[in-house]
Length: 323
Ligand code: ADP
Image (cartoon, rainbow, N blue to C red; front, side, top):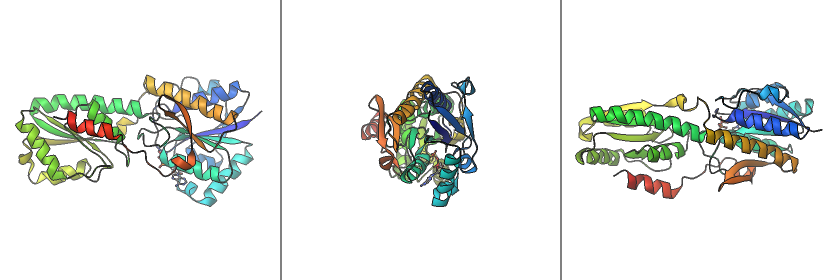
């Protein structure tokens, strides 16, 4: 009989619960015991963990957020903090740890695995910024939430001949903004990965106005050097040169909430199950992700502290399609 622990960490993402359910039930099916850790690494340090049964994870598949809770834990970034985490795992008899979370969480997972403890990560963040997974749990749902908002804003923008700056999440990465821009038919996207000249953006908006567009929509990534607030401030002095009146909407945390869609439930279920498979094979120190349409494991060493680059083809398409 093996005993493993599982936690959800960092920013919550729709589908984390589906991943937790898959970890618990596939591990139990192998005759293992699973300890659910509350509040991510903070709960791990504090020893907040208890055994989860198959019933304990019933009715959570369709819920957004995470029933285990999540937290940010600066102490885990110190070696002393991680030693306390190891002591807590050992006191509870856990032989391995599954970390469901995003970039920071997987960097923490790597640091813990470097200290000799078997850790498997599950790629879960709405930012979609993890190397080792073409798409991460929660991204598709968050993208659809952003799109629904963009579609609605376009309707009102058209009625009033306005330009909208719509700021979406994504931390230091532009994946969510780029895909929302393409799927939402934005006139422009502003991304952290691409240097933005606000003067060039002003010319683009004015050109769209002169071509007779009834509205203009710019999707702005929160991590861009010019985020929505900065751009609005920049244009405030001379808004009339844009042609359009300007409005700003910051979508914020609404993108995180809500029920996971079908794609995220399925991805989470597959990745959660694959994390248990990896441990059963004796594989650890890896991230379980989705690469070219299949489950894949990538050493955490290659994942930690890195950001997945944007797809240059999509980047170019975003520019071409905005005409
Ligand atoms: P996400 O996983 O969503 O990217 P964070 O970046 O906030 O969220 O990371 C979640 C937690 O992971 C942090 O609160 C911290 O405990 C841990 N963590 C982040 N970066 C590191 C690091 N470099 N070393 C160790 N632990 C880290």
